Length: 89
Image 1: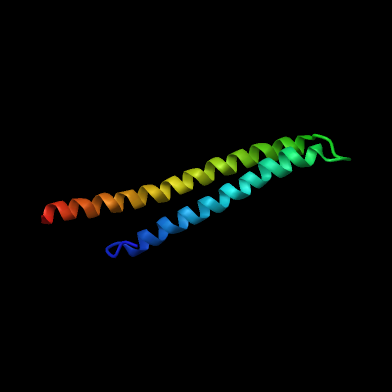
Image 2: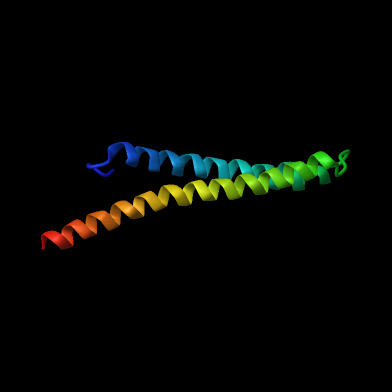
């Protein structure tokens, strides 16, 4: 946690947590709802399954973007800290 920007640090953590949760939910929809469930006995592949596959892929992509955004904030903190250390040396 960055002591100079605590709110931005919390936002970064929230983005990363939300992103990973979204990735796991997207994987569930993609793997189970879109691929495994239509192949079970008594089921057939329907347009709803196509929607679930694409929404799973979209959720995975959106979650990874959220994680990347949270990590980018963290990287900017590291750059700021290293720049400050170099200026003080």
